Length: 312
Image 1 (tube, helix red, strand yellow):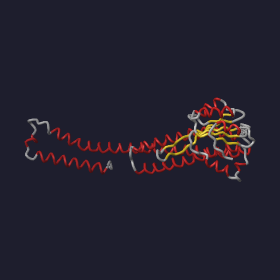
Image 2: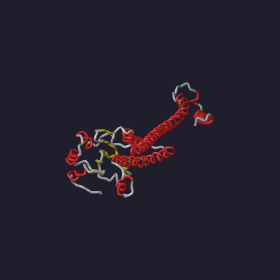
Image 3: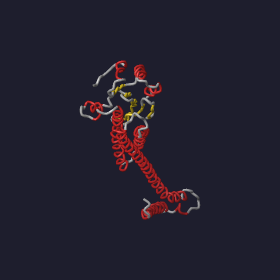
Image 4: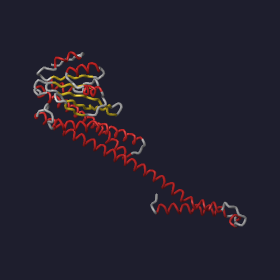
């Protein structure tokens, strides 16, 4: 049975029902309603504080009668080109699961569809399996986000090898920041799932622990993907800096060659620009064209010499 409620008191009756109950709260702005639900279901004040504080690090805490878990739901905003995060708090007891979503979007729509299926395994399993399904939905969404980031990394890599622009370094920094954000969400969640998979709490059955170990394997793959993308972005930054250095070296080499060619010409011009009285060349009728011709021959000769040495 699926029911939409608008007041905290309407969900009180579901606490002691033998059937597994899932209560999902959208939005965290109604602090009083969350406090009422927490008080009725026996949640610790620190848990309620962590639910409302959306800057929590993903974690798992065992309070004996229930488990409190914090995860980050990631989504990729195509318009802004960046990852969006949403905190999701989960509470597992023997016969109910509470989820508190920071936003109002239905992040668990696929789970709802599985519950509606009359022949689905989810309808015949316990609350711990429902928790696994919700965590699996969060982890599966990470793959979608990382795939989009991976496509951008590959596109930028191809562009960086053929073009050179200062805007590329900003894109690299943006992608590295996205990878850091993803890593901060995945690694702590991986640790929390490890605790659940080891059945360090009595609320997790062996049948569910098998599925949790599979989710743990997914988080390992996600961690490897994040690290691979970070390494690739570091290599791309090195390529950018190397290209920048090579371009600077080419500019400096060109300027050095030009300076070297004009150095003897400047010396000759300086010698004959002293205007001493006893300089016979200054009174020679052909002195001016001879000096200019000699300077031209000297300059051309140096150009050919540099080309022969393959200096440019």
